[in-house]
Length: 198
Length: 343
Image (cartoon, rainbow over all chains, first blue to last red; front, side, top):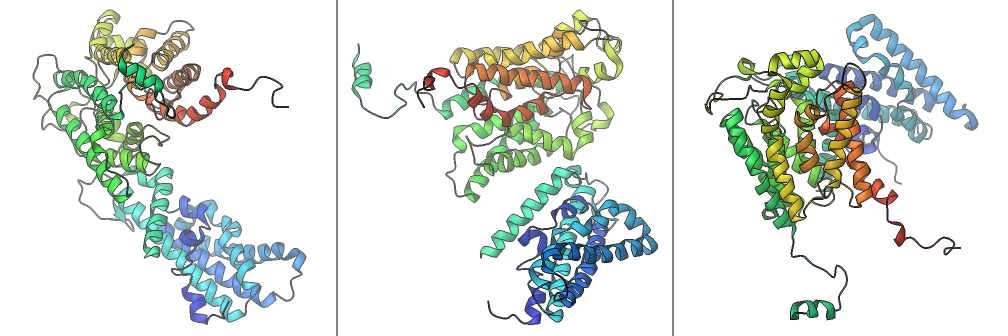
């Protein structure tokens, strides 16, 4: 595989390998919290922060971490940053923290983070890992925002808490329920594949 | 022996060897025809707008079928009538007071997602019309569980045209029974005997095509006579549901009203027209009996213990994916090798 430029490492997370749709990773929060745009955006930003920090740190420490216990070490590093995010969210955006609830601590076991640590940061330099983490994080944020925008607009008739349609609009409750999440995700995967084929 | 049978005997070909000249097309159009009497009756019970809802539902199912098959590069088979049957059944299981555009969304869900994305006719796991209804209930819970109309008794079939749903909605017998008990039911619908008569003929609040036990049974008997359905599934559902309601449905054991439980709600429509769907039900008689019994048990369970007053829709949807397994478990023994032969 040819060496990619830093920009390529960054941009692959935006489309070619966008986490929930192309890698199909991190689906648990993708399905659970995308009921409204602010949830999706908040979750995406939190994951991006953790992803960038953990990628950088793991890439710095990659020669010090013994191979046999590397997963445990990655988890400790990731958990540290998740705790930082969790405490900051409690301090500054408490309502959003309440909305996201258990899914903030669960970022620790999000496959994207461990996947990028194992597959990328452990083998690449600091700058490349930073670009990779940032790209993947932004891609994830965009994906969550798009999915949650569709679900909020159709399922609740609002976008970022502002009414989109007139008062006569009857919201599709189905879209903000769990089955709606699965269907919406499936249809978005389908659309991505159709566009990708061309 | 006439020449035709002789030819059939001497003709060497792969199975099936005996043909009845029955096609998907003929079965589906016959089923549609047998569904006409309840539709006509519904005009006299709930007013002329039931025709509009049914027409919209059928038209959008046929359109959705054509578009889905074009998109998926399959041959367009809207002439076989299966989309028409789905459209009719979808309209029959929505309340008569819903806005006329609601079945369009249900039709897209039924035909495109539940039928064609899962492989098209012959491959769908779930009954398409019931998926459409389940989707509508999840999407528009208010309209789908409250747009019931009070039956018309004086032939004023234009009574509900143009009136808002909220102004006229009422409650179904099963809802009243669930929340106010038998006393509430007799207070609202008259004596038990009067209820038997009214409900059996169709004069009860309910979905468009589910209210008339009489016409649905007549349609079912016709299909039975033509050999398009067998008695196993409907009888098994009705007997199981009636028996369990009799045992557990009352205030004390063995005081429930089995007749009322069968003729109110969608039990008969579901038992005769939905649970007997060829694609989503087993074909062995013994498997059919178990399949029907499972639906009966689940229906009564949802009716008596669940959150919804009626459970036949979800009961059938829950049993549908079990049909292939039942088929395997109840395979006739004579096709199996004798014991020890495989050693």
